[in-house]
Amino acid sequence: MSWFNSLDSVVRLQQILSWVGVVSAILAAVCGVLAYYLNNQARTLHVRQVEERMTEETQDVPQDDQGDQPESVGEEQAEGESEEGGLEEASPKAGGQIALLEEQIESLRAELRQSEEDARQARTRADQAQEEAAGLRTELDDLRQRAQGLETRAEDAEESAQEARLELQAAQEAEEEQFLKALRDKPSGPVDIVAVQGLEGSRETAAHLQSLLERAGWDQVQVREAQFEGTPEGIYFVVHSQQTMPEYAAPLAIGLAIVDLMPMPARVKANPGKSPGYLGIVIGAR
Image 1 (cartoon, helix red, strand yellow):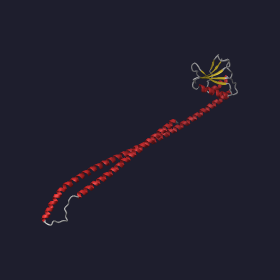
Image 2 (cartoon, helix red, strand yellow):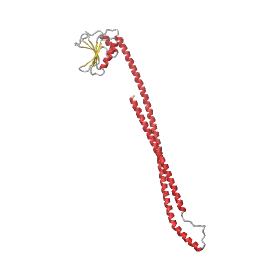
Image 3 (cartoon, rainbow, N blue to C red):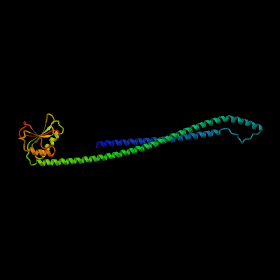
């Protein structure tokens, strides 16, 4: 299940990265909207302050005092000339200040429009971030579904493999039982099981065969390793000669065929260098 654990780790990492992206996008959108709000409040306050200043300065312009009446025509004309001179001096100054204030107001209005545009763009980015987050959530859901599907398939495969192992074990046990039946109460004798040195699996097969023979009551079984010129093929008997082959070789050949270790008829190689009555089993490449 190591491959499935790796997949689960990848899905978890993708989930964490997706949520980090979503949270980052939402925080960016919130910061943009908050900045717009604070900027807008500041601009509005500035505009109000400028308008108040303009109103105060406009009220400071000299006006005719209607409550005081001149005592004589001469005084009235003098005061009129004096007031006209004062107005002529005050009007250019007030007009310049009003124009300056109007320019400042227009500049602030332009900045306010830019702030509104920035806020609109921030809202657009926030909407895009939400759409992206929705897409990431959908992709994450798909990954979860795929992971669940793979987990189900892995569990099914594991169950199938376990069933196959149990069936194979049952078949091997049945074969071994047939092997033991074929050799029980049959003549037995010395058996020399020879594993090929350096051949993978040869030593293990030889040990397994020794165990089976001992379970069948054969107590003169030995296992050894030997070197060969070239790699022997299959499993076969080695005897002194066909005429001196021991009688217990026949039931042993039947038992080996039952457990699928040796074909029938058995392969036999004569080696005059062996003593009469010798029976060896070479475990070659299968």
